[in-house]
Amino acid sequence: MTRLRSLVVLGVGALVLAACGGGDDDDDGGGGTGGYGTCDLREEYGSCIEATGSPRSIADQKNGCLEHSGLWSTEPCPTTPELIGCCEYTFGNRFRECFYEGTKSSDPIGYCTSFDDGVWTPATP
Image (tube, rainbow, N blue to C red; front, side, top):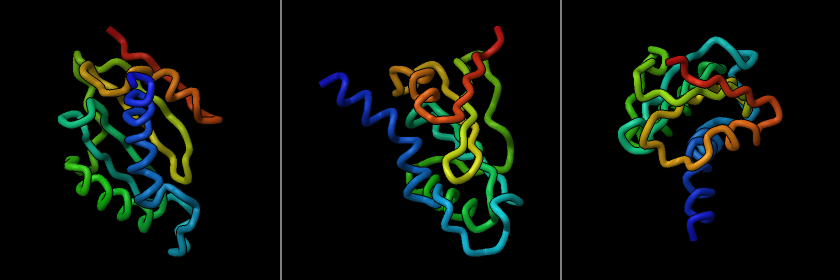
């Protein structure tokens, strides 16, 4: 049961992103870049996700963020004493997902390395 719960929690970030424009199906001719936004999910999930992609896909990310009770902005994820570390990866768009104390993810490093190009950067004390 704990493993199932962990897998469900680990998939929240990817699910939000995949369901809300994380794929390569942009049709706005933006070439996959030009947009940026941050979804702060620290209150609900203990994470924050920065996304870079086409303006259309970033608009989709914003909608998905708000649907999951996140706070949308164009500021980077906050560096607070509670920061555990951040993962950079590509999943259609380019993402930087940061994890904080209290995260619902039981293994943020394992989650990060599940992406072909996932790079984990631990927080500096």
